[in-house]
Image (cartoon, rainbow, N blue to C red; front, side, top):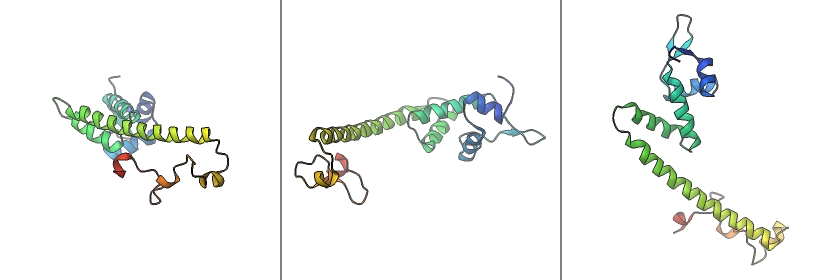
Length: 149
C-alpha cells in the first residue's frame, strides 16, 4: 500500500466510514489530505495506521480528546511517555467504574434475595435493599466512596 488512497479506500482499509474520516480531520486527529485536481481527497498509506491507532485507543476507553493528545505526543520523535501515563490514568478510571458496578451488582443481588417484587411496598420496608437513601437527588446516582467522605 505505497500509493495514495481515496476516502473510500482508506475507510474500507481501516474499517470506518467516510464520515468518520471527515470527522477525525475536523477534530485534528487526521491531517488534512492532499487533493487531486478533481478535488478528491488522497491519503498516504500511514493514514491507515493512524486510524487503527485511534480505533484501538477508543476501544480501550480513551476519549477523542485524550487520543488527540496522545497522537500529538506520538508525532514527535523520541520517547513517548504520554501513553504510559495515560494508560495508568485510564486503568484507575476503569478500576473505579468496576468498583461502582460491583456495588450495583451486590445491591441488585440483595434485591433478588430479599424477594422484592413491588417497588412501592419494598421501599417502605426498613430492610429494603434498594439504596433509596443513598441516591443524590441532584445527580440521580449513588455517590462514590471518594465523593462521600
